[in-house]
Image 1: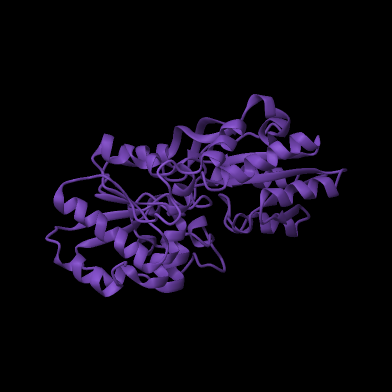
Image 2: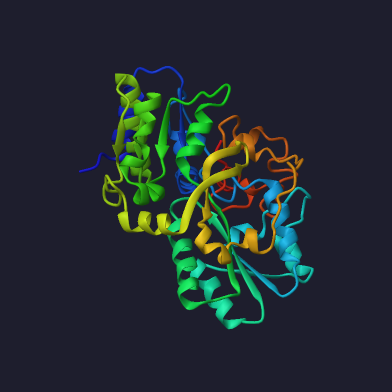
Length: 354
């Protein structure tokens, strides 16, 4: 039987540790931690920081700008998950939601297959799906592309902004001033990658890692396991989320990704350009690659007052940003961390998680 929250907190408080900084790398964990008030329950020497685990939040402003430009193309339907609609680019207030008010045909989809249906229902228009996410959503996007090829759809394409977690964590650990002692690994991504997807952390970096579920007791148990590893000086990968995560993950989903995508360089907010961190469509599927189909070009780095990049790399908590709660609110966001349902700023704002 899993220990209760009270038992876990008592065990955590007994561990003889100096200030210890742990990072969650999943937007769902970020929101769950804030909603349950977990930070306020932990002893002062244990700090939880948010990492680059929200796919909307890691999309840079210059990519958003290119997205806004694409939305204004004639005879084009731009399909996206809901969170992406309200994310501003480098100009405050300029989002897909605003472009829709200006006449762009922007639709909210719950899955890539919804966008595929849009293409079939609108043969006279091009439909572009914004493929945002990590390994969790990549198999579904791959399935849509492969299905489009099977159906012979000529008016459907995907702009793949899909990213992979491992290169981002490697880049994060290589940053100057990096100061994290353990990772709370993303449960959703781990259902695809399995435990083996995170073994590089202790093996190559001596970094403790625990794959966690999403209930408060899951997260507290994962935090305890991380702190226990640190106290014992014995880093490893532990799987707290055994009810969903297997050692090898989901072979079928990984095979689907392999069939559709190849690794490529990609841009991350807060981390810059990271080699082999994105998923681009294979050459044989180029007909469904929106970047090639529309000649999409990303402008140079955008200047923005948003500090999301610092928040998702552990440099600061949301309240460290001078815009937080004043100029930047969920109703009038400056950056994606305040927009996304998985964003750290949105979580802190909603639950006063300080």
